[in-house]
Image 1 (tube, helix red, strand yellow):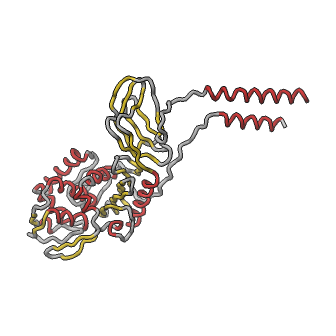
Image 2: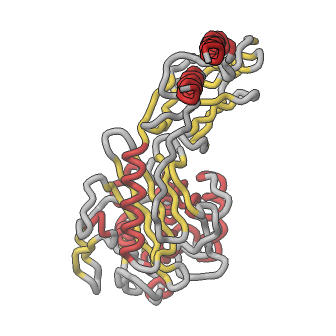
Image 3: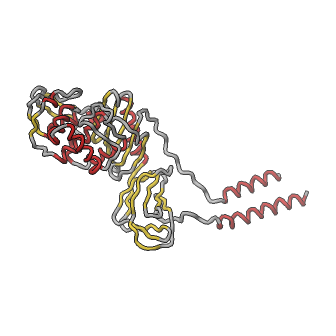
Length: 383
């Protein structure tokens, strides 16, 4: 009986303490490809990455950068005369003839939809006069306009060169930048297009199987494939539902099925695990005697499960998932001194102090403990 009494007291004491919840762990993704990256295109939040910052060979995903560079720098109605160099380009082509005249817009179509290496060379020569000059200018464009710094491209089409490299993270950012352009979005999402070249009269069909429908995925909005022996299979995919717009980059899969399966798993993970929340303009955050606030409405990506917002002493609002990983960060404006420091849970509208006193719990526990001792003492006396 004495053992039973002790057990009951222990259970009462255990449940008297405030609950300490362990954040629900996001399920592990079983991905085969060597490097992957999942980005929220609207907010820039990194939702998942595996070797996302590792140096990789992009193959024809290079053409995403070439396309947006051409759209911004060139005149889409300009007529380009195909050079011997472009005509002689190896690999996947749209079979341009030397001397053939094609508009810049149509060359971009052929480069993105059919992955035409010859079209990419013709575009680069039109924009910058030579491939060497294109190399300098595209890399400057990527650093200054797109703000990526782990990429160096030697050519416009992604044919292998040991110094032609990028990362999954940079490719996601390049795609995010490009998707802000309406013309790029239109071409990137085109499943088929009539091509009436001098030597090739056909219908171009997107090489991306989620775009052309051979691997149906109803949320897909665009994509680009790539392959050279050194890079193996590469895939860039954009997809959207009513809440999120996602970018999935998958690099170095051994087989096509690997990169498509990994892409689908990434996208489903993003759509199932995350949503958006809007922080209104003027929302205040109190940190170590200082008040910070949002100067404008901010859209943030948050997990469906419990996550947190935390403000650092420098006024950096960090959005965390349920594992404590930082999804995105926003610099707040310093407003005025304050006296509170807090860490606000995303799923609640009220502000919680970072540290809560355990004193009320002790007050509740003490009578229970004394009662248990008194009861046990009476049992001993009766014996």
